[in-house]
Image: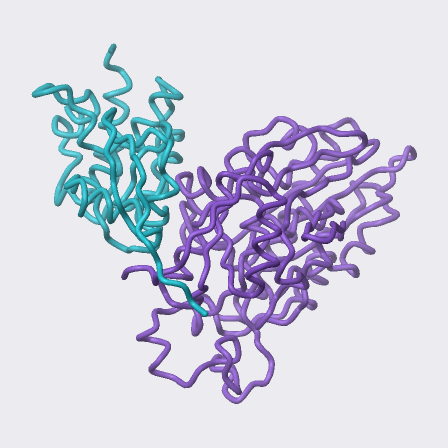
Length: 333
Length: 160
């Protein structure tokens, strides 16, 4: 299947890029690595008049340590994120997640920004035009009702990015730039929760950086995911956890996030609360994972049934928590 | 108002040779390699980045040429399977694939060999686990992978 024709934009600077987004507002598809967008173009899920490539944008790639944080430019490839010592030395869950995205050749070009802002997916939506035409258009395609939940009025397409859960667990912020200025928002707030339009980002805004605050003291993190083939594939259930210890050896901060269980990654606050205020050896991973199970929303719209995926959310959450608890003990807590 | 897509003149460096190509921006590198340059070693199978038969090396790293716009490959060193042999002499990986019967229908072979080359260039003596991990994005429906892993291991033991 060929790609639809488009006009190609190749800005050299961020300033040029945001000016183009402003000038052609709503008509631009953005390609960073292209591994997601090219397929969306091919399946005619989008047919933008313009495609803007970020490959040639200066200073759009790289990982930098700054005061109190590390900054990952949005065009940094997942391979670079996964292999960076600045990342793996501190942000274990993020390095683990980067190393588990798709397959190695995809990670050589796919970027952290593209992964974070990948659109939600659904078995009934991510199909060729031919297959989609066999049914009435779903909500995400601009139709009146959901195809996965017959007659449903809410789009339950699934956010399957691997980067978002660990980024949220680490309290990361995204830097969004547009022609008139820039703003910093917590990564969790990038998501609208609506499967049709999953991001709370303006059409003329460009994600330029991700800022990860350096955790203090003793901490550990982990990421686990379920997928059909361990060599490829999007997560069908995923979980990231961040834990830190007080000087008294008690867990004083826990952030548990699950992915692939709805149109946005979900912070499992109930699960995190269960892990807080106890010593690592007294923590209850099963209980925290049970909260993840209760909060996960999953319907039959991916390769595995929703009921099974919810059960697996519990499994990956428990494994992530257990790995982070081992990590806490491993650093002499 | 949708403007009319225009052809762009680009130069692609493929297997050490520079080609001037005039192409639309919506064409993939795979299409240009196969249709404009006659380099049919890279194959299209799934056409969505899942299988790895379209693998080429971009600055030494394996990438999916079906997911890459040709215009995005300008300025990069592209290596296809056609660029591996030196005249009649096959690359040690190609020899090893023949020797170890790592080829059946052959459709995945260019992608497998290029991915393995990128691995051996970075890690000359990989463990079996490293080989399997590196090849994890390339699908073979014939061999069951064992012969392919054996071939890569054997090639890693050949002194250049």
